[in-house]
Length: 385
Image (cartoon, rainbow, N blue to C red; front, side, top):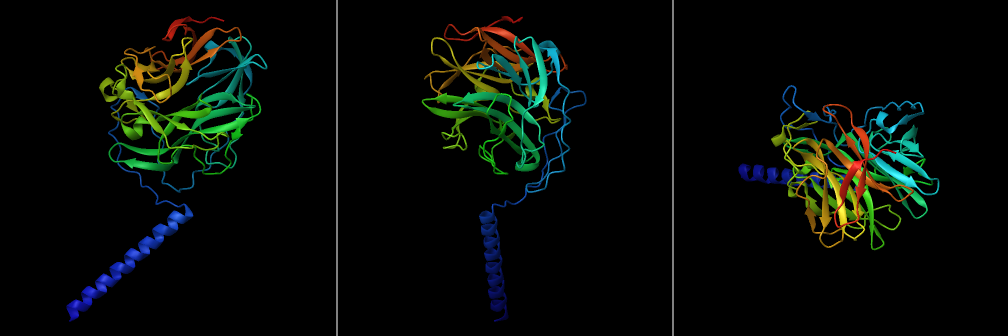
């Protein structure tokens, strides 16, 4: 009888415990709270002296942890310098027809402007992220787009105090999101299109970088990178946006993986560490859509190849964003250059800007001529304004 009583008591206590857990889980779901993630064991560290992209990984926090107080970046001194004197990753040029001014931005989020593509004045501060999780954080791969009567700034922000996934013996995945800011001028100020503090344009459990905008059949899409650090084999994806660009109207669709390109190499196979870690995988970076004069739809994108960073091109067999996408067999430019984009001068000349590194030197923007008169994009000579 005593044994039956003990079993009944144990069963009763178990039911009470499960009910409490259910109540707590329901309360957390209703309040929007999530169980904090605890950083786990990561990939093996890089060998001493090994090639390493991105420096050492910042310390990982736990979800819900208040980020440390960030000091504001000092306002830079405005000067005028030549393009050759600039150091910048992921350069993007927006030619503004209204003012006949070229605007250069990229990783770092500052702005330079020029009338001749040779001498550039800046850097200007153009971003105001007050009241959002991005406030004080570093921005990567900034772009400027003109849609309707507004200017939109697409940039990627990384918050290492918030983890979205712990991949065992690989990586503690931080929150990375490409967000949209809006302004009345290409000179800003650019403020978040959605003012909610914790808003993310893409899925919150996705590691998303390098988003760019592309319009097809009156729908504006954001083409994004789903990071290889989370997936191992990085992907290129797209998601349709609402008319006002404030939210996605469907979940992202994957259109290709990095390993589908023969020129894209697995990182460990080429001796490349990332954030001080030996993480295996294939990288997707920096998409930009374009059409040749014959109507062929292409995408510029980057990865790592035999000579470190590399620029590639893929073409859509259907002529539409959904693809299928056919990868060029060889890199478009494979000499530690990448994250390139196309733009036209005010005289109609097609140009291609890219960042390039010599050895372990800084990333420097370079401009080349390009030819889109046929079905495939051709790279021309170095452009000298």
